[in-house]
Image (cartoon, rainbow, N blue to C red; front, side, top):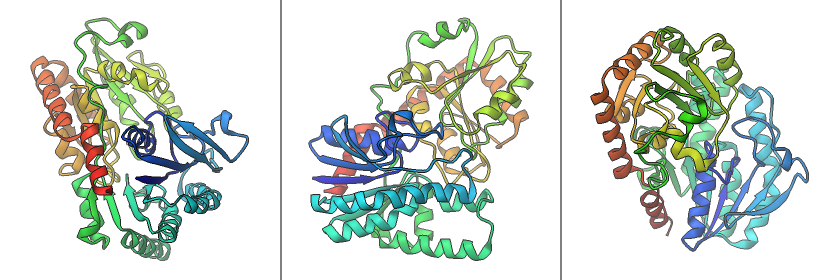
Length: 402
C-alpha cells in the first residue's frame, strides 16, 4: 500500500506531534508499505530551525526507510495568535507544489496530521486527483484551543473559522482522533459516524517499561538513593499550566527527600527557569535522546502531567502514554471529568489545574505512601499494555487503511 503522510512536524525520534508522522511512518515501512512524507524541516519543540536544514530550503532524504520531502517553514521567535497561523500557512504554501508532485506517485491513502489544519485543503486536493482516500488525524483541536486561550477573539472571525473547519472535516473520508471525548467533539462538529475513527497515542512497551534497578540518570544527576524524584518530561508549551511546577517546588523546599526534574524544551522553558532561581530542589535537563527515554521515565517516582484548564479536554498529551508504560504513579493537574482525569484516576491523583497548594499536597501524600505509589504504578503499566501497545494500535490502523 502506498501511503502519503502530510505533516508540518516529522522527526526520526518521537518528539511531540512528530511522533505521529515519524514513528508511524517508520513502522509502516517495516511492515512492507511504501511511505512518503512531506514535512517541514525540524524546528520543534525548540521553535528554532535546525541549522542543518537552513540550506537548501527544499530537499529529499531517507530516514529509517521513509522517503521524506522537506519544504520551508517560517519559524517565529514568539509563536502565538495570528503569528502562529502565519507560521503554519507558510508551510502550507511552500509544500503545495511538492504535494501536487506526489500525484504522479498515485498513493492509496493521503493522511494529514493536524495541527496544522491549514494543510487539509491540499490533502483533499491530492486525494481527489489521485483517487486516494483522504484521512485527517487530529492530535488536538487547534481551533478550539485558540478560542479558549483567547488567541482568536473576533466573533466574526470565530464564526468564519468554525464554518471552514466544519466543512473541511466533513469533506474527508475518515477523521480520527486520540480519545473518546475528542471523537465526541468531532461528532459535534458535524463529522458523520461512518467517518469517525479512534486512533490513540501509542507507546512501544518493549522500549519503555518499569525499571527493576535505579535509573542511570540518578547517578548522572547526583540524586541520592533515598531521594524521591518528581519528573516532568516533554514539550514545554503555553497550554500546559507548567508554572505550577516551580510554585510547588518552592512550597516543598523543606522536604529533604525530594527532587524535581524538568526535562525538555519549549517556549515556556525560560520562564520556568527564571521562576526556579534560588530553588535547590529542582533540576533542568535538555531534550534527551529517544534511546534514553526508558531510563529517563524510569527516573521518576512520581510523574507530573500539568494542564491548563482551558485545554484539558481538547488535548490528550502523547507524553501520557510513556508515563503509563513506565509503571510509575502520575499526578495530573486538570479539571475533573475530563479525558485526562478519567485515565489518571486509575493510576494516580488528579488535582485542580494551576493550584500549586493542591499539587504540593498530592506530592507529599504520595511521597509518604510507598504502597500507594507502587499500586498506582502497576495499574499504569497494565493500562498501557491493554490499550496503548504500539504494534496493536498501528496494526488496527493498517486494517482500517486497507
